[in-house]
Image (cartoon, rainbow, N blue to C red; front, side, top):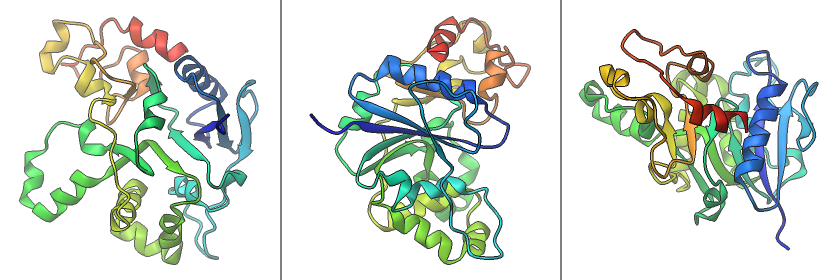
Length: 259
């Protein structure tokens, strides 16, 4: 029998709680039939339920004098992460909803796959004023959902630790830096468009169209994300983030969210 795949997530601070981890674990249990281990790296495992393996947050390994841990997700690229070197892992953020089979995320050939960030947003014509910048932003991967072999992409963390100040000066967020490193090594591959969708842009009617129909799950979607605003908590509270966006009936999403 093949070794179980890994589902990885991270929780630190107070923005998300144990029930968010438990809820995601239930979603995975509902939508993944192959053997797997669900791993949560966290600074507080209280309240996390059975079926979730709780491990300490991996250390970034920042040089002395550098205390900026905003990019702590890069620690997922440690060679020795959790003792799982060589295992196939799918990382999932806590602020998403799994709505269909996760199996294809493991079947797609290639050693690294990630969401193309631009797939979650509508076109931004003004970005074309700076073609080089536009090309780069079009290439950036959204790190909410990515699959990789643990330990195989340690060059990402190595490059960051070589000069953390320069990295945070040159790139706005860690997924930009991560994408640049992956591209430089020929490993930046994207999920098929439509697997990971934006609730705001793909499920809700555009503009006043949200008053004409309730949100619906696009055919073929496997994960719903909440890129930009409104955030997941706002959506489930019925808040659209702007006066012209009605949330409407989202019972189908609530059912999947509860797991």
